[in-house]
Length: 286
Image 1 (cartoon, one colour):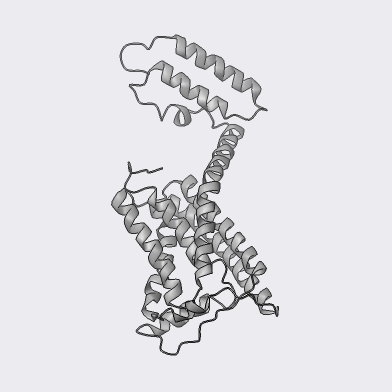
Image 2 (cartoon, one colour):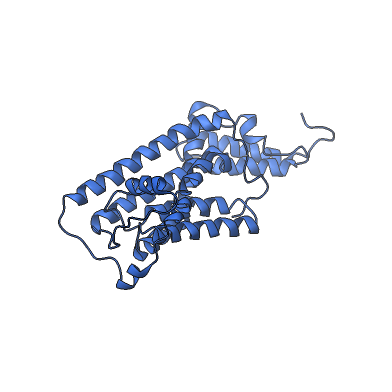
């Protein structure tokens, strides 16, 4: 769903950045554990599965594409400035963590190794290329997490911008995918698998994760006694809203209460019925 009512990019505030920092750190540590661990395990195995076609060995080596390849880190850095609500940021973080886990399973099920010959001419940015090459380690190929993580980020960001923004973002996703081939860091199967995993994660997991986060948030507000405060119920209602709309909002909130809270649910439901039966008073509501 497109959300263009707010600016695509904006300052999220220090409070949000303080929230995003530990979440990002946990994700980074999770990535290191899975990625480095799987590569180390495969290094001690003798089995290697062929994942390339002979025609892929004719893909030209363009080392300057490492600039596009490394631009994935801009996507990670941009996350808190685009996803300025905690729920949105946390949802993407969880999706990325799940993709990393699925990638790790793939690395162990399909132990593989690049078939490209090692290049000596590293182009205009040899230092950057060597750095990227070291980060990639040796055996983690199927799926390409570079592709999967970038596609998941761009799919999330594209839902928050207009048509032109979406086109530019998806061109960026395609460019990153192509860069993994032109820098000889991945084979075609790796790229295709990365797109498939990211697409499935966004389509099937994102809405469920949002629902789980909302349920956890509501449960926390109920247990802490904050649920039902004016900021939670009244803030979304404009001064022009009728009592019927307010009652509907209360009913919607009540429907998301856990089954164990039957007494407060019933009380709030009765209150919503009373509100719906009262005519809105003239003048400014108090």
